[in-house]
Length: 239
Image 1 (cartoon, rainbow, N blue to C red):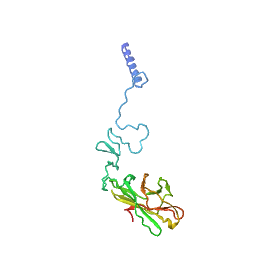
Image 2 (image 1 turned 180 degrees about the horizontal axis):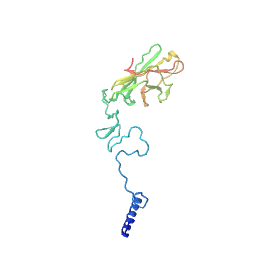
Image 3 (image 1 turned 90 degrees about the vertical axis):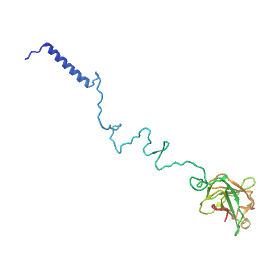
Image 4 (image 1 turned 120 degrees about the horizontal axis):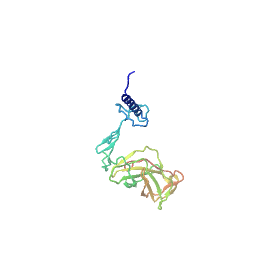
């Protein structure tokens, strides 16, 4: 057996101790600091750790509009297929953005009752709505109506609607639409009567009414053939 000097033996023992200490440090047993994780090229797994299904998500860069939108000049995001229009004044010409498609309001109309056109025991009055505003507007369907006394109390039931096909009537400033107000002559039918002070007229889809002085005498209130009828609105001031 070869002879080993004491100095060489101590050196070998020291080297062996250093090697063991190095192994303990690399294993991270709490007595040393673990080395930082190594960066591996490639795509990271989903944050949830589950499998990735379907198409990958699309990320939005800071300051850009979300996917599916486009950015209009000035920085306003708009969705495809939508448009934004600025509200403009009514030109009354029927072109562009006008009030042609909007209904006439009570304050824009004047109500009158035309001349009676009697026939076969029937009384027929045109109830006329005239556009007194400076814009074009529309009326559609039936007006409302009721007879009232001098105190404003209604006389008799509301008029019934005659069958008809409602249509939209476009009224330029100064134009009119009319509906027929009809009832059987009380002297012929023998119905109970009253003499109204006024006829209350409410434009279609409105709540406020217009008041027209009634000068045509008695109207039926009850009994035989006492119903009063209204027709749909038509262009003009009467038949």
